[in-house]
Length: 107
Image (cartoon, rainbow, N blue to C red):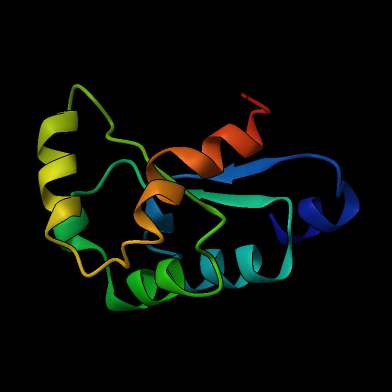
């Protein structure tokens, strides 16, 4: 995906399911390519690796997107687990709404 993101910088790429089992690679690509986003669906936030949470609170706070993976993971459960996660108050609205609005050009 790194090569694709580099070759097509205007292409918006969403990497899904916190990259398992390639979490470190996913984080590295998203840090170096402004056109790459991370969809947080597929896992309950209580299982997010510490490295993902650190990046979400820091350099990737504008690149992470809400996703529940319904019907396998209900949005209500995802939201409850996300509320318990150590995410900065300033980052929460970005992940839950603002980043997707910017990515999809929604007012």
